Image 1: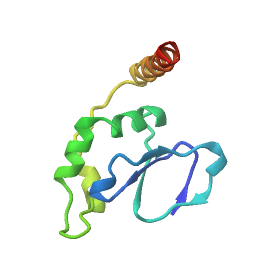
Image 2: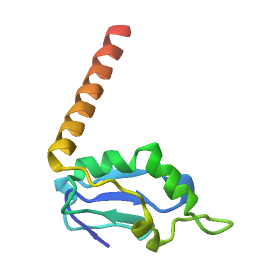
Image 3: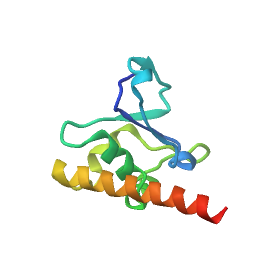
Amino acid sequence: MIIKAGDVIIASLSGSLNNIGLVPKQLDEELANTVFFIINSERSISEFLFLFFRSEILKIQLEQMTAGAIMAAIPKGVFGDLLVPLIPKQKQEKIIELVKQSDEAMKRSEKVIV
């Protein structure tokens, strides 16, 4: 599958749901393995989708939709069944900014502790 900068890629195997990435510009138009889902949306900012798919709410939904006994995976058709809130882009930007501030504060606090 061809990926584009800003796509969110998600591992489809149930034990790998924490493996989520945001495609950087350097990997625009590269190929990705088919064990990943590629997510993008005109209604959502890529960074917000990345954060949202890392949330516990979405992980729980995805885990409930896995199928298979030996290598449980998420079927391709489940994304239409996910409960995803439609959040205005202005609020998405605010959430992204708050998360960045939180990450920066965490990094500063780790330097102080060490």
